[in-house]
Length: 359
Image 1 (cartoon, helix red, strand yellow):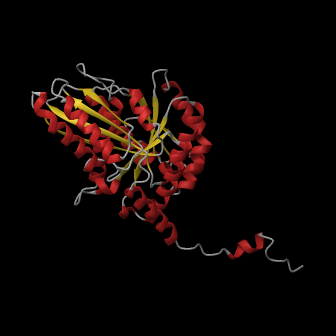
Image 2 (tube, rainbow, N blue to C red):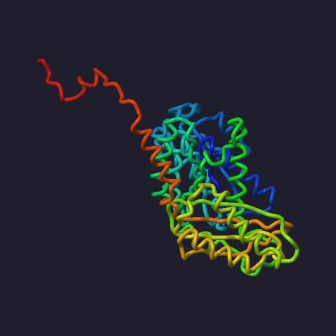
Image 3 (tube, rainbow, N blue to C red):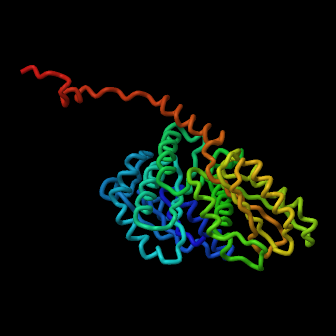
């Protein structure tokens, strides 16, 4: 899938950079171009991508301070500037646009849904969102922002792939180091998914192509992507369990949104040397995923790569009924309930008709 990436906000810009670098390192050529958009100039400066600074007339490049309503307003006001920067990159070969954002901050959570809406209005290609859910320790404001942003993103995007920070932060890691590791893990998952069927090496028996990814995501709503790999024997007959175990691991321990296995549709791509991929193992894994997800719409295929390992990339779409999603949404609702009530402004009474004039 030849994709154009747009990173919105600090987390979005960093993850879009990780995706671009992974694609370039692997030589896939699936990421055709990338752009970073932000209200904070300091967050754009270190990125190796082309950038657009929005909201300069109102926040002077200093960011929105976690205010996602302001982030949405600024994206709405400056969306033409962003679309102008994207226009020359939206060539005929682009098959999808992926808007990448952290859903807890101000610019990403507020601006991403607005940009997705505008892109969907202008272009006749799927517009997907890649959203990062904040961890429990990131504060109530981030939970509230993410809950509101997610509700809007799911409505506006053709599908929203989610990454749960709580699941991927390792104990003892620094915040910066932890996020870098998360970005690397997610870049591998989404990067392989985008590249499936594009830059293949060798001839597979049934190669996954762009249309199968798009058809899987057609279920809309929320999606998750998983990955796992294992060393492979040269004889494909010895790799039946290798393939099935990799697919199970990708789902049970490698999903970007853990435990989100109640899905409307699924896709399994087995990556590796076509001469080592077990057809029997691939079919067993696909049937297992059907049973695990409760969906009859589970596609499967090969992703030929020159490697002595076999890897499984699993895409699950329509996972919003999962327990993990409900836990997050309840956390966001609780954060809203816990918000302190704003103190009344005494002067406001004099600007309404609720108080009669003395004269």
